Image (tube, rainbow, N blue to C red; front, side):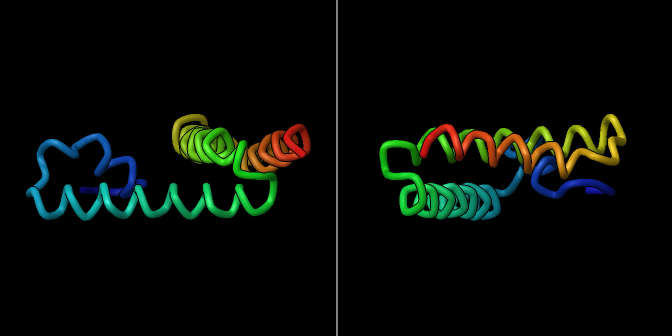
Length: 91
């Protein structure tokens, strides 16, 4: 696979993986997103859990891009601030 984010690599190559590996990856991602949704529902209410999950996953991908593609050193702080602002708007 080379260097870099394993998640991003697998996501890009998902159709080329053996079926058991593909299934395990998809199941793991579903569980991860379910956990995010459960935590969001407990914190800001179930009406926001889907939106929070999508926002969180999108920010995680934006963070990877900022660090890997653009070599931004302040990306982590910026991404955390964006997520915190979203949470405040929903509470």
